[in-house]
Image (tube, rainbow, N blue to C red):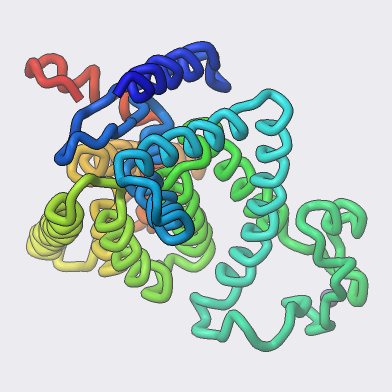
Length: 362
Ligand SMILES: [Zn+2]
């Protein structure tokens, strides 16, 4: 018992002496669970990493290979092991290395995202054929397929036909890497960080596809909704009931958001006798709600609608009346995706500020 108390104090001290990447200090809270096992939980950004699930994995591992140790010892071993991992990744030498790896991973996935953006709206396979120049059809060698660098070295022209390569290619690669890095800096190496990477990948792809082709392919939105349910179900929780509750809530919010947009779509067609909102937008907002929940989705809708309106007014003003406002087609989906990405990283302070008027802490 004395050892355990010592261990608790040790954990608190080690954590408190290690400021995070942003200089913040974490505190460690302990709970006495059933069977008096010591449960450790870090309050703050890394809460996912040291959740009881992570501990549970170590416990299973230890239980398998050292059956003579009692279960309360597993908790302590698990806690210590997790603390070591936490400190290892927060150490000043490793954080930049992990950041570099995150950026390289983002660049590679951005390159794959470009293939999806070029092919999915045309219902082509993303696996076959290999990468080709969209203008002359010449296959692109691996050396000419390096994210961003190849575009610069080829001076944005195809090696075979010398016709220009769209700036969208390096832009999407850069944006994917930048968002992955931002997610790592905001959420660390955590379940939430990985989830937000996946969501940003989907949103960035959909934004580019809607801007280029005015389409939001089902191949992205529908799996996106499903992944949102899975993400909610797997979010670190203590009990199976909490997992099921999270999944059910995610499904509920997705349906609610879709119904809300269907209602607007119906009202619009009633007033204007034409389609204003596409079904792609409805599926997109269901996806965002499945991942982020009701309040961030509300903020996304508000910001997306504002940005679309602003863009529309600007487009009409710059065309000096040549483009009548009511017939100008606007990629609402692109703006919704951009608003969702903004909400992921910067939405919390806005929501907190808004909700404090109602006495709600968010
Ligand atoms: Zn070419």
